[in-house]
Structures are given as structure tokens and as C-alpha cells.
Length: 291
Image (tube, rainbow, N blue to C red; front, side):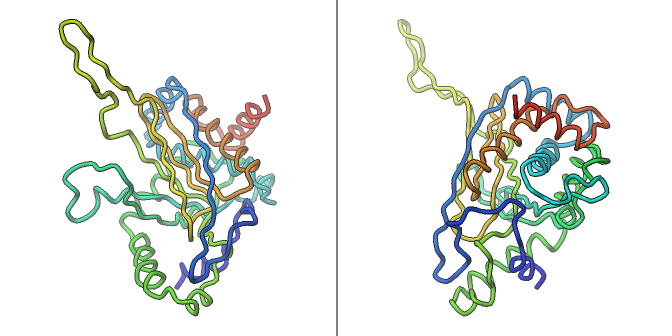
């Protein structure tokens, strides 16, 4: 199976930290860490407006921002060659709650997701010196939509369920060596707007006292991925502002730089011109990082 072959031979563009064990049975618990941040509300409004003007979803834009972050932080040999595409293994999380045959009757707190590799981008990459940011954002969103209609997304779920979960013996694990238990470089998990009320009354007022309420300012998502999974997952939610989370399995200093590059790139989306190249945006983000 192609997916099995990819797992065996995957090598992360940013090295994982040394404590990440290979996939074995019984599985070893691999550590994960996280960073959290909140974006500026004005930047979010500007970013959504630019996305609307360009006919691009916010998912496509944040996916392109992740590409810029990896371009800046990784040591890829091709990234300074204008004629060579910059590439790494990118995946995405699908929220399956609204896609099951009988959707749950209410929005419950919790995750029900599946993941899928964005094979076209991972294999072809992108020419950073000649591709416009918004063109990449459109192509990444289009690939995500196409994957929902393809056999690749359910095939990965079936492989994990019917092969990995059903055959979790030591012998089977030996035939499926997954170095450091990593399946790809990064997953994009655009959770979207928090689906519940942001303000909750905890004590009703009366003729002499005002009501007491609690307002939720930020919501951050984190999934530790103790066994096989990506080297990093980027979560984006929105309340009155954009909320960022990043699960990672890198060395802390490297991960800190990656997360900062990502959040800086996302906060800059509202200022990106129609034809602005990825490499130009990367240079601008780099300038902000060293300030």
C-alpha cells in the first residue's frame, strides 16, 4: 500500500527531538509539547476581509502561512533556489461531526476528526520565488475540497482501523517501521468559530444587584498525539480574536521560532497584496521576527 510505503520512508523537514521513539508494540508514549497565543482582533478582521476580496477561505490562507513558517525555519537545501520547489509533508484535519451519516443532534465539546495527507502539495511543493500567496492559498483549499471527494481520505482511516488497530502485534509493527512514530511534518486544524455563546450569566440580577456574567475571550485546542502522528499540528480557533495553538515534537527553541513565524505570518494576512510572492512575504515576516 502506498500509504504504508510513505510511513516507512518519511523523513521530517525539521528534525524531531531525540525522545521520539519508533513505532513498536506495545507502543511507547511519545511526549508532546505546546505553544499557545492569541492574535490581534483588528488583524483578524483585516485578514478575513482580504480573504473575502480574494475569494479564498481562511483555511487556505492559514495553510499558506504554515508553508511560509516552515520555509523560514527549516534547513531545506532547496529553499534558496528559485527554480526548485520548496516542499514538505502537509496534512489536514477534517471535523467529522457534520459529515457522519447521522449527525449528532447538538454541538458537543470534544474532537471527532480524521486526517488526510495533502499529497499534491507534499509531492510537488511550491515555487516560493514565483508563486503568489493567494494563488497558493486557493490551491491548498482546492486540494482540501478535492480530498473530501476522493478515496484517499477514507482509505487512510480504513488502513489505520483495519490494519494498524486490528493487527497491532509486535510482528506487524516490525513490518511497518515508522521512524520516531511520525506520519508527516504538519497538520492544519482550522477549527473555526467557537460554536457556543461567549457570554454566560452565572448569577441573575435583581432590583438591587446587577447580573454577573463570564465572557470567554479565547479558546485553545491541544491534542498530545502520544503514538503515531505528525511532528506538529497547528490549531486555529476564533472567538472575538484568533486563537493559535501548536502541538509539536521538535526541540523547544526550534519549535518556538516556528510558532512565532506562523503567528506572525497569519497576523500579516490582511496586508498581503494580490500578487505578492511567497518569498517576499517570508522576508517581511523574517524582518518582524528579528525586531
